[in-house]
Amino acid sequence: MPRSNDPSGTSRIQDVDMKLEVVVVPVSDVDRAKEFYGRLGWRLDQTPPGVVQFTPQGSGCSVQFGPNLTPAAPGSAKSYLIVSDVEAARDALVAAGVEVSELYHIGPQGPVSGLDPERRSYFSRASFDDPDGNTWLLQEITTRLPGRVEAAATSFASVSDLAGALRRAAAAHGEHEKRIGEADANWPDWYAAYMVSEQAGTELPT
Image 1 (cartoon, rainbow, N blue to C red):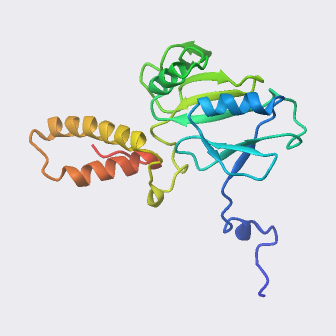
Image 2 (cartoon, rainbow, N blue to C red):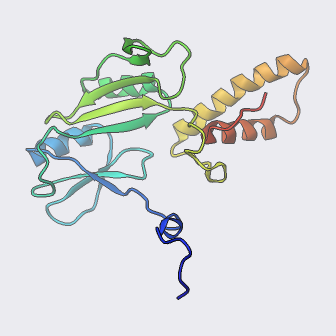
Image 3 (cartoon, rainbow, N blue to C red):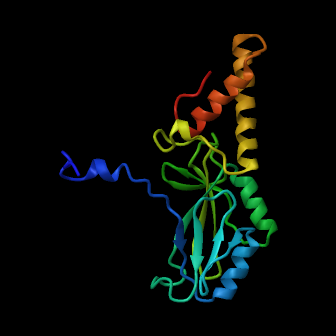
């Protein structure tokens, strides 16, 4: 095997894909936690005995809990759930009987009540706890920061995410047609360029 010219090994490790598969959540009562996460509508996966695994809708990463899976104290976990519409996500959770905080956004001095006035990605949030006090923070993201998503890897995890992206593209395309002063017959290409750019965090078409 040829020796690497990179003594730190950085170039080699960057070539290894490492996909986050499971996050372990510390709970004190497995049955109670199982009822709660099932109420969220998350998929209950087949697992070895003693392990309970749920996967949120549209997520490539799952949640596990069970006896002796982690020495962490129950209630000590805090995780983020990314949603394309935090209002709709909060309404769905409340309808399922989950106690969710009011919507808030991050201002210059910290949290401020209500949605971000400009509805910017990463700013609007809500949160809820499981029965042990583990916190789940809902964060609305529609446009990723540059470099977070490869443009060639654009994908949508659910029908609702795709529909939301199409609605935003349609609204932006309407503004585009106003600017050019005529109907744009090439709208499918424009939509595609907008949706890929939005997800990758690159410059949007105008």
